[in-house]
Length: 379
Image 1: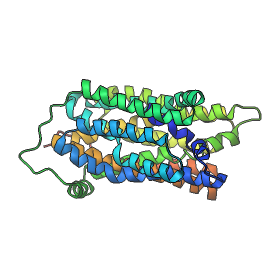
Image 2: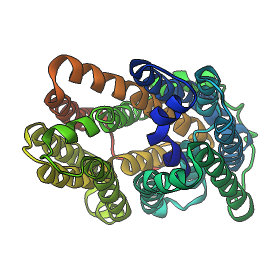
Image 3: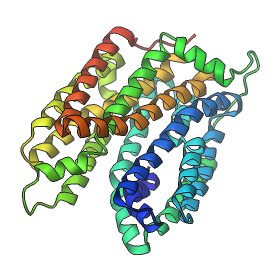
Image 4: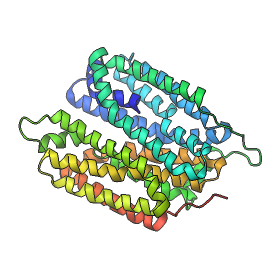
């Protein structure tokens, strides 16, 4: 996540560097590049998940890191936006590092440690999200934007070497049943009373996270006073949520034993809804940053708790397919969220984005009450 965070904030600047003009074209291609990766990731995640059940989860992590590192390094060599778009699509097709790592962790840790392990994994994601843009900015200043792609690619490759050497999976290929194909796993997932509600949950959680990405810096600029460090405040608005999400993801497993996964999810959905709503009416950057930090406490619980339910409710031989499907749903939310946020902001104004997201999270809480089940041991 550090490596991915290096380059994402500088996409508009890099587009200008490779000759994209005018400003409107830069805005268009910035959105198109992000969406194209999300769409290809949504399509290919279930495919890789089905292959993980056939050939093992560790090899899928290695594929995501090593091939992803090569693709990102090649982005530092592009000469035009067409080449860049092709590589962004390939990135979505071949990476999916979080889904691959989640499936691997779920397959090798004991059941009683799954909640804590998912929290630790998600903590590393949030720390990478928070620190990546800051480190990327420092590196881009020193070696240029093209250089950040080479360093990010090398970091992914090094991560692959770590997994290859130090992560051990005792994978036994399925022998008693024929492995599910992609369309079979997709059909079973959509029909499953357990997995389908979790796919919808992760889709809406990611949509609620990504919907504010396009408008957050502009909103911070609007509520800031003359002379305020707007760029710093915008970075802190992203970082505060990520930091508190990381802390919450690390600590939530202690509450699971007392309250259960389902109750934790319900509480987090309604808590996040309550903290999103007043963001529409803040008067200054200080109020906004305080609410963004509080929001992270609830957001940090949603993804690891849902992923833990997936692992606890799915037979071990099907966990790769299950996490591939949930990763695809997450990618759809990541692709649709920014487009929805931009559309709402352009038509109804910035506050409407926060109000709509609050409503989505409240409806998600109702959805969890009605459709998500407390996990039991899979058959």
